[in-house]
Length: 147
Image (cartoon, rainbow, N blue to C red; front, side, top):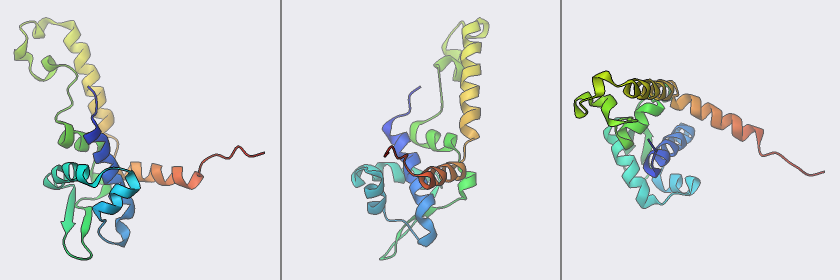
């Protein structure tokens, strides 16, 4: 399993919106500048998240995007599933009928445990936690090595 650019950028977009929406809707052009992502590519990321109910949009001069749910309600697993599809380490875990050996295969049991661990970890990470971590990181600033 590998998270694509779409999944990584999607998380960054949600983090950006969550961090900047206190002053009103966040403009896609501003997100693109701050995150150094093409605005054209962001449309491919924002539309599925809007469809999934993560963000809502406002039109007009003061339009833009805001979270449609609380940041504590959106998990990393939610974002990845919407943008990448189901988390799947190997096909036989989700579709045992695809392999005649799946019911007697020790390897399948191992891959299921790995997949369950990944899902549990990702579902335990909320957007709120990530925003807090980002704020903490920014408040510390970058280390200075000046003598």
